Image (cartoon, rainbow, N blue to C red):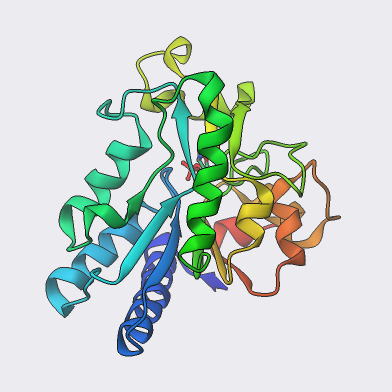
Length: 243
Ligand code: GLP
């Protein structure tokens, strides 16, 4: 779906999410959302907050699972994805804090494997993700699944590519402060979501074209989404330039 600009695309993504939340509410069911961070979804979260304030959109039936988190990082650090999500969404809506799940970076390395398996199990225990929101890295990463991530990968501890650390350095005082590791949902965790919305704005045209029209390859993790039954790329005109 190509929109003239990121504002229109963000409004569209938010309206799709709000419609699902309301549909589930009407059926007396929970709505399980997989959520992403990065600069891309910020205006979509702002639109959801506006809909909560002005249109009575309630998050009481919403359960969330975030894609990823740096490792290690202090939860309260400005750069943590925990802080990001609270700053941009959770602090401003009526979600039950018990329904918020964000990979927890406080586990010791030897405990991480068990914790990650529990994270995946928890997603399945609430019925799986109804709708997964994604951004895309310039190297095609989704979550922090860097090129080469297996289609069978589940939630796990990963090394960040140097290009990703450079791309995300703006959030930190210096590149040396960007963590080298992260916890991320795996490709198979993401592919199990019933519906996927990937957003991309601006300078992402090359990687969007490769992901949508190129070969399906683990070297471009987002290209694997071509095999999903219900995945929509929501992009703006500049991001569509090479399609
Ligand atoms: C980050 C996040 C991803 C995000 C991507 C793109 O590192 N881990 O979930 O989609 O990189 O970020 P941005 O939206 O800032 O371009």
